[in-house]
Amino acid sequence: MIREGHLFPCANGSALQDDGVVEFLNQLSLLTIASCEEAAPFGGAFIKFDTKQTG
Image (cartoon, rainbow, N blue to C red; front, side, top):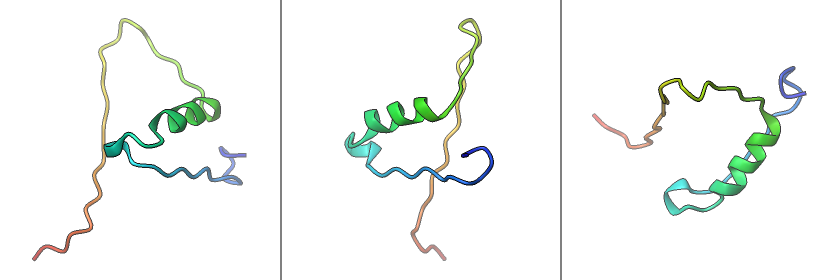
């Protein structure tokens, strides 16, 4: 249902305060299929949203 766009999972918490991180990762693992090569180099990306108004 998620893949077809009929269900949109939501979560809340604060990674900076370590609140809800473990629970989020547990739920994410139930909703996704992951595969990886153990010998492959590690990589990742992040996005930061900033609500400050700057000139």
